[in-house]
Amino acid sequence: MPRRFIHAADLHLDSPFQGVGSLRAGLDELLRDASLVAWDALIELCLAESAEFLVIAGDLFDSTNRTTRFEFRVREGARRLVERGVRVFVVHGNHDPLTARSPLEGIEGVTVFGSDAPEAVTFDPDGRGPVTVHGISFGRAAVEDNLATRFVRGEAAGLHVGVLHCSVGEQVGHSNYAPCLVGDLTAVGLDYWALGHIHAHADVHQTPPIVYAGALQGRSPKPSDRGPHGAVVVEFEGDRVTSWRLSPIDVIRFDAIDVPIDGLATEAAVEERLLAAADAVLADAGDAYVLLRARLTGSGPLHATVAADDFAAGLCEGLREAAAARLIWERIVSATRPEIDLDEVRGSAGFAGDLLRSFDALEANPTLLAQQLEELEQALPDRASARGLAEEEPVERLRRARDLALAALFRHEGAQ
Image (cartoon, rainbow, N blue to C red):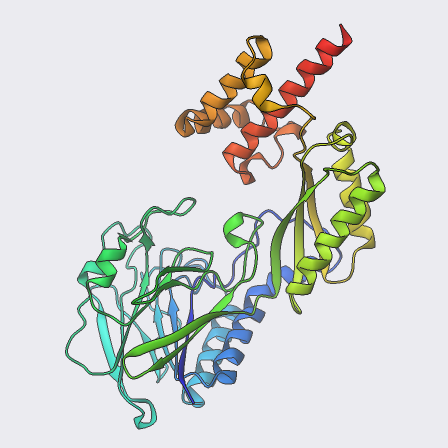
């Protein structure tokens, strides 16, 4: 039987969900306890996989202001693991820095790494061979030092696991805390790096494995929180990791689908295509609830219909009322295009060509684009047209504006 341990991170217990309103009766209660239910599922996963130990790579809690209920639940789960022979190793991250006593300190079998320097704990579960776990916590919320370079493998035999909350390379959408490079991590000579801070699961490096577990439970419709979330099951022999896999255990799954309108002639056909795409997402989600955002894309004769201000909102409301129990339609947005040949317009000498080339130039200058979008959001804080802008990629926002401008221009020219 292979030896195993579990790698989790970014649980953000006691965290409010972001960007989600009361879309259905009872949803508020489900959202409130989702992170706790995911924590309980993590404990069950450790036991079901016969894990020898659990590592938590930071942000166990969402802040240093924690409720007693959540702290008790965490201690209860940790004690249950220890009673079953599962060691627990924890580092604190930028959301829950070790500025005071950790709620898990004082539990025998649980190691909370300090913040002064990386520490190493060597143990031998049931005499099967030694394992050394290395880790360091954040001592403050904003750690800008490269903590990876402080780690040292040491002389102990067996598997060596590093646990670190950090930013490897450039991470868009995340604060650049404890920044480091892949080379900084590989140079230490550890056999597996269990990372936290980035909410999307990612295999950063293969040999040695450098892995972001991702958030245990997604918290918002942002791209990094979409799709399956859970913990990583790592198998090893001696000092070698043989495999690792994400085991989804999320309670509520945020997801998004793109549904093209190309070739569709009726609104009923749009609805059928949306429902088919939603069914596929729901089938992949297991027992998790799915909060789904849909984006209508492509071009075709229905563009003018689906681009109307009230079409997407009305369709979403209708689908929400008829949806299965585990499916919650969060939002539908229209990003369809008029039936315009952009390459042909781009090569033309008229005003439309000049307009399109201006959009192209702005798209090629991300700094200027971000600045102008920020100015737009400040100028239109209460306009329905600005709703949700901050949750969309800047280039997508720009392309939507481009298509709307071109469509309006050609409609005006056609009316002359």
